[in-house]
Image (cartoon, rainbow, N blue to C red; front, side, top):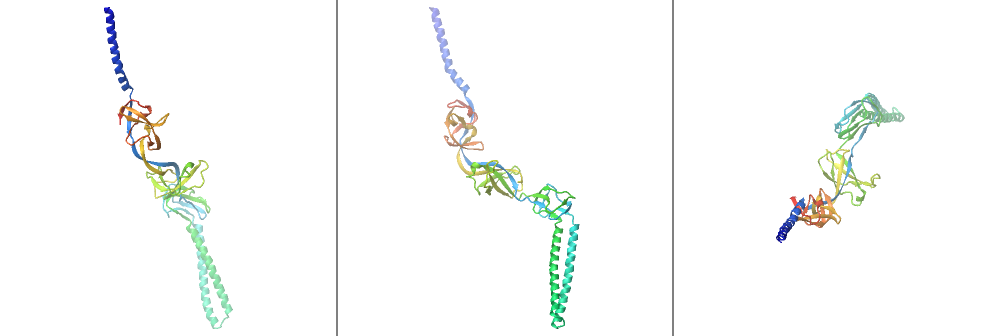
Length: 356
């Protein structure tokens, strides 16, 4: 009997111990299973409905200088990469033949000028003789005809002299614009014919950006819309207006070629890439970091921090911009949401906040 009472007493004590342990264990386990997260507060941000694309810059003023006469190159004053100003001497063509032609034309002019002067004196003398009836008027007509013929010959010679003078001056090739020598084609000693290219000059005073945008934007893109441009060769971001749209889609990429003119940007270079951003509209909206929005079977959700637990809430998202997402519905400003660790949460999950 005593042994039975003893066993009952020991069993009762052990049962009380187990009950006490079972009441404390869930709290410890619960704290152990809590997920550590960081938090963020929903705030108002400015969002822009915009589209970006990468294109290229081309020079509007990039003439290829060609020879206007034929001859041998005797001097080059510029090379590929040289920076030149308008009017700088670039190259010289042998002048000897053109100097001879000019001298010959000048001599011809002087000869005819002397003849015409003599004929003028002869005309005046004979004019007085006609008045005195010493010679007939027919003789005077012959003198007038000869004088007129000489005058016409002088006009022709004067034109030949001007042509010879122009050709002589063209033996020196000058820069028509300021810019950089993109390409030097001939070398000293090369014989050039009329129209042969000599230099290609690129100027960055006026450039043109060609940027292909997706065809789905055809209805939204119009001439005159502002576009932001950025190129790797410059720190400056500029805003210009769309100058024009190519009327035909680019067949290889099914895109619209947007054209924008660039002026007064010395650091921008022809041939460089350019990023164009068109802003269609802007608005204020509630925003949270993009890590806070998680995809679940019900859709996009955020987890609202409520003391030591989180509440799952479905949201409608808008624009994703610079690491934050616009929340169109389901969340109010200043509400606190889970940030780092949000992807591991479910509704009513216990949490520990590492840092706000």
